[in-house]
Structure formats: C-alpha cells, structure tokens
Image 1 (cartoon, rainbow, N blue to C red):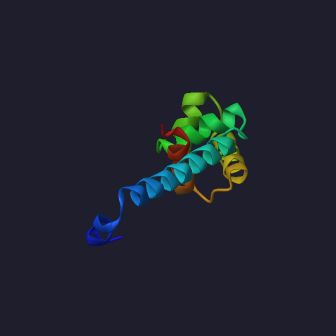
Image 2 (tube, rainbow, N blue to C red; image 1 turned 60 degrees about the horizontal axis):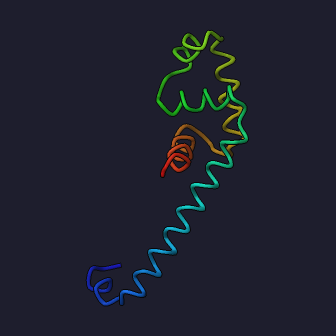
Length: 99
C-alpha cells in the first residue's frame, strides 16, 4: 500500500487492518509452536543447534553422539516439522519464539 493510500484510510480502517495482521501473526506463532511440540526432546535440541548454524560434527561432539545420529535426528525433525531444510527450520523457530 502506498503512503498516499495509507494516509487516506480512516482510523477505524487502520485499526481493523492492524487487528487482522495481529491475529494472523498470533496464528502463525501458535502453529509454529504446535509443530515444535511434536519433536522429541533430542530432535528439538538438534533443531535448535542446527538453527544456530552449528554443523553436524560440532553438534555431535557437543552432545557426545555420532555425526550419523545427529543427521538422523535432524532429518526426523525436518519430516515432523514439514520443512525442507535449515531455512524453513530457522523460520519456524523464529516464528515460535516471537513474543
């Protein structure tokens, strides 16, 4: 919406639009939280580590597990969350953690 068009909106229209946008944001946040709740504790731990750009080898060393196990949990988390990779995972975590 252009600045001119936005300036022409009444206060009631602006309030209504903001209310709809807030409701949509709350729905996205809750949906992201619901999806993350589907993860096992280990999958969630590895998902958060992945979102922090820590590679599999470093994650495995930090957690005391094999690289293969990290990759298995990561793949399982992607499937449960219905994301295709790290970008979708990061987006989901960010949406879930917004307050």
